[in-house]
Image 1 (cartoon, rainbow, N blue to C red):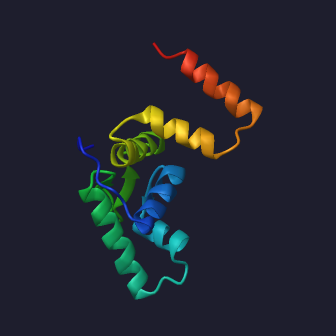
Image 2 (spheres, rainbow, N blue to C red):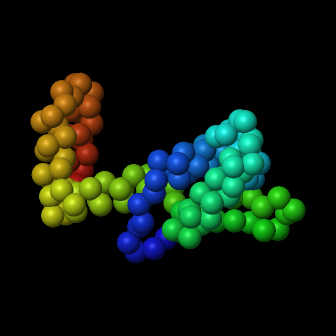
Length: 125
């Protein structure tokens, strides 16, 4: 993964979501799941999305089989962490505390969510 993660589009994110769930897939698998029509333009779209994700370091390609197999390089948790760090950097100068406080203040948390948040905070060094 690169040190400065590149953002992904909604379409690229859909591909990542499928790959996180499937663990690995061929281009044909992705087309069937994301573009069931399977039109020629859909094939080209999936190919381009995979190339972009590979270039951004989020997806790797196994060229060992006739049909290349694609797998995520970035885990869902790692990706979420990178995206939240980017948002915190843009909106609050990198301060995660102000971002978390805003989120907590803007949404009513359930008792379970509050307890989990307290537990996480208490476990920090």
